Amino acid sequence: MEKDSDELAFADYWNHRYVEKEGEDTYDWFRDWEQLGAWFKDHLSRPQANILHLGCGNSTLTADLHALGFTHLTSIDFSDVVIKSMETKYKDLNTVWKVMDVRQMDGLFDDSFDIAIDKATMDSMFHGSMWDPPDDVRENIERYLGEVVRVLVPGGTFLYITYRQPHFLKPLLARKDWNLSVETLPDRQRGVFEYFAYVMKKFDVEEDSEDASEPVTDSGSETGKE
Ligand SMILES: C[S@@+](CC[C@H](N)C(=O)[O-])C[C@H]1O[C@@H](n2cnc3c(N)ncnc32)[C@H](O)[C@@H]1O
Image 1 (cartoon, rainbow, N blue to C red):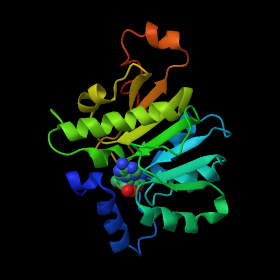
Image 2 (cartoon, protein in one colour):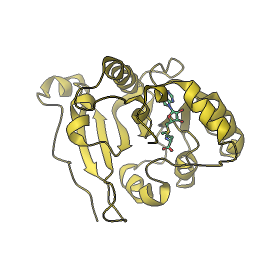
Image 3 (spheres, rainbow, N blue to C red):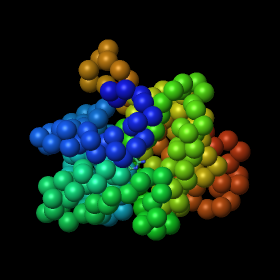
Image 4 (cartoon, rainbow, N blue to C red):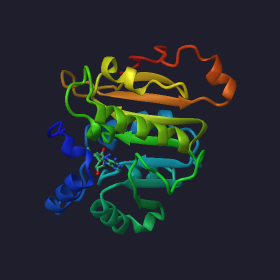
């Protein structure tokens, strides 16, 4: 990201950015579809899945998923500037675009999405030390993850793409509601930054969650395929 600052956690910052870059048709943070498409194809099996794209910005991801046959898409962002422009740009897709804060998704029903996707959105909430995140960071993450758990169907999956490393993120993402695994994304440009996909599968039935003595699994960690 340009900077890790507490400003990034506010809609004003992003509204200004999107107004300033009005001519910028599209921008994909971290990784674009060319780099991620194959990975998504491996992780999304049912075209009829109800998918929630969290903090969509002006990424092409919603349109790319649609082109792949995933048409039940809801894309949200707390920047009304970017949602207005994306809604206009992609009106022919007939997908849902909403101005909404991921920490308070009041307009979305409990247990309603099979898949939730975050690429670089949670990263806006980080500032300060990753070793010991400030209270506001912990609170924002907690509220956000609580909302994601609420809107996912039992057995649903939250996919989070970031460059932030597992030793920092695992403790923040671990919850009794889901199983967490980490994959290192295949890198076509060797020698550059590694990216990670955090895959969180909400437990299907209550007993699963009670039986789960350890919610963080390493079974899928560092499974990047080359
Ligand atoms: C770094 S950009 C990533 C955009 C896009 N996901 C991508 O990969 O290119 C972060 C986006 O998340 C949005 N965002 C940040 N915090 C948010 C929040 N609490 N609720 C909704 N959207 C948020 C910002 O407005 C911005 O569009």
